[in-house]
Image (cartoon, rainbow, N blue to C red):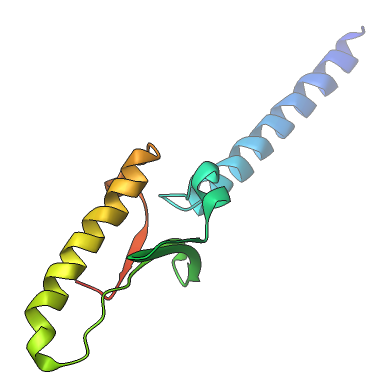
Length: 114
């Protein structure tokens, strides 16, 4: 290979490497901070008696929405309703933990909100 060809090849590698770095960095920054694991995504939507889990799209990206299915029909059931919500939340968290996921690392939206 001639000297001139080596210089052109070196410059091409330098330019392509720089472009890869710039666009790769921008792509990494645009990715969500807490992506939803593919294994979990394949299991959703998931619905049982006390809670439902699904993927939703928000302005901040995709999130996992967990809907707690406690019901209240009369004002005198308020305390029982709050207790049911707490128990159902624990059940949902245990389901996720049982699948090997760290609840604190997932982008979860709870319904009803705390």
